[in-house]
Length: 132
Image 1 (cartoon, helix red, strand yellow):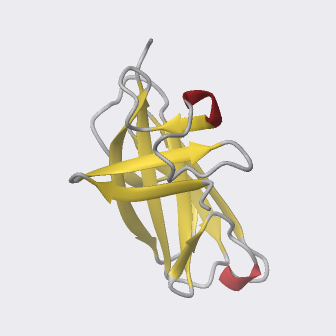
Image 2 (cartoon, helix red, strand yellow):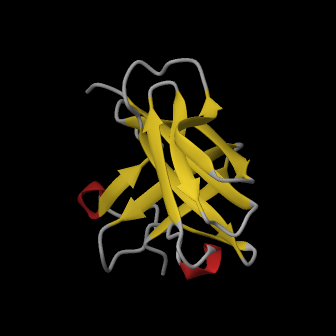
């Protein structure tokens, strides 16, 4: 059972999350048991995906990634590569006195970091929320 997934389906990325105790991979799951599905028209869609590498300390408001404006602050997922897997927690494996702040805005990702075990690979998924 999988509570959520991000996979290539029919040639495009699809993110689907189910409520606790339900299987997101069950495509017959009633919509009231699905917390989010990027395939829903009129709700949200994946606007951008990518990775970037942080290789040294960065001062506040450093620009890591930029893109053409999305018009509003998007919904985003950020994950850090650790031991061959992505995790959304920057813990002690990245350094003992680490500090990292990433801010996702309409035109990119900014932030600051210090004392990480460099290099750190960061992956992101940016969602455009559509008015209903």
